[in-house]
Length: 369
Image (cartoon, rainbow, N blue to C red; front, side, top):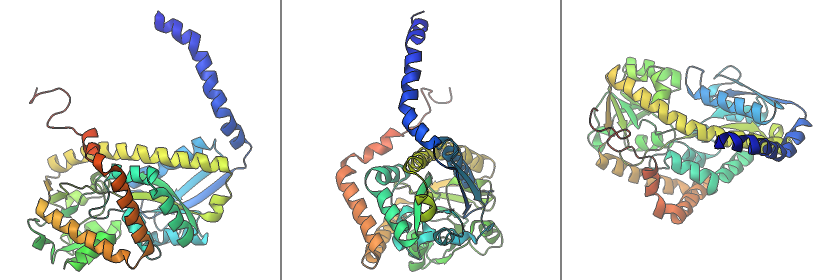
């Protein structure tokens, strides 16, 4: 009875209050002209990465009250997959979707926004990106180097450190290993003596089947499960202490971005942030479900890399980054930004792990009960 009276009395006023708050933006957007962006992803629709692209497009449509329509083509429909950022820069497409490694030729340091060994964990990256200067740095990089404005699309959960058909017991096992890799990880492994090839997603599984490679890294588990990675792999190795991830984003041609009113830009940025937060929780759920299938159906073995291996590899990686920072401005500035972030929040970093800890049981159930 109390709840009924409360809602009858106060809900109309609450709804009116929300409507009043929304009126300035909504009315401003309603006066805007309609825009349409046509872009392309660096991957095909067979990868579940595309669900994050479609989700951001959906949110943009809703948050702009239909004033900005987005269409994203799959890899190679309009331009070569690896050239989506360049194509957006030149105005051939309105935006290109991809991972930061695609920017290495013009903005080498941008790879640190990707799955950089020893780099940031997914949640760490989100906090740094939105609250400690990461977003502003990426915007500067792309506006200067690609004539584009980056819009974050998704942050992925911990990548599988290595899909492998060979056991990894010591750091020596990485030397001479034939594997698919890219970005900083590929460069570092190559420098250590691994035989590294850079392959697009569609060529990885056939290469494993033919024995061209023995191992591969590409993305998190559920992204790769549906395209057959687990059919050709025995071991799934994860990092035991520092799970890293990658930020995917759209590089929007700067002229197209600047054609939007300030209100539309704010709506797009809000859609972007909400899409990123949604992607992180969604990928965690999907990775857990995919791991169960990988073990029980595909008979994969999920393992942690020996800590001695990862510690040494991460130290080698750090040395590699700081060496590159002497040669590349943005590598240096990103590392400096990370250092400040660590100084400001490092004492609290361990609590990020506790915030999402499951422990040895689900809920309040004990044993098999």
